[in-house]
Image (cartoon, rainbow, N blue to C red):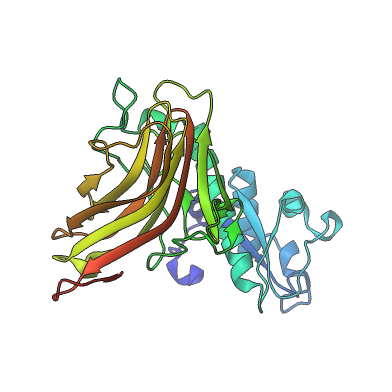
Length: 325
């Protein structure tokens, strides 16, 4: 495919290097025989300066593009002495493992989460906050608009709504911190999965913050497709508990089209304030035409603690009955 796409008469080293320079991340897949593959003359391919793999990886390293060695099969990370000079920097890159078998999904989830965190860090360093839309008003209260600034991860359908599944890199499976995915969200909020108290079974999620800045708020969210529910009534419900809120907290639900937000509600007109016991809250709406993505979660403005559990996303069928999405 590389050979077929390179124009005639072009230096393929420059051509490949330019294309690699346009990528944000390079995954170098290292298999069992990665160091042992030879060309027709019996020379190691990795030490051939004209080998496409060598050119692409070295181009990424020279351009300071993040390169993640991806170890598959039984492969181990190559030692510095085993690599040609053009690939020597690869020996210092932290590798990820994706092994077949029962650990495959765990390894993939960890890789995906690591890539997401890497991009979050890069975007933060580029001061994307200047491009984020304002979400809080001057009285420290989020307005009725939250804007996505980068494409967030998604699940196929509502997942782990009771927070009893695995925690991946500190975040409940299927969920993610809204930082950099929702305009204005602070990354300083502590979000963790904890046992639900008061004799209730299972776990819940807790969000808390002290010494918040005047306009700070945190948010935990999930995202899934919704295009097949256009015209149906949808409902988000969840149990929430609060303690020592300086401002307010609530559920939020947003429906996105291909390029705009079609619906948004965040309980701004009925906020949860102060200290409250576990209470069931709900947001309902009809899925508008052109809907593609459903986003939902909880938010905490300013200081205090918020606990959330037993989220449920339901749609109403033609008989008026609610059923899980």
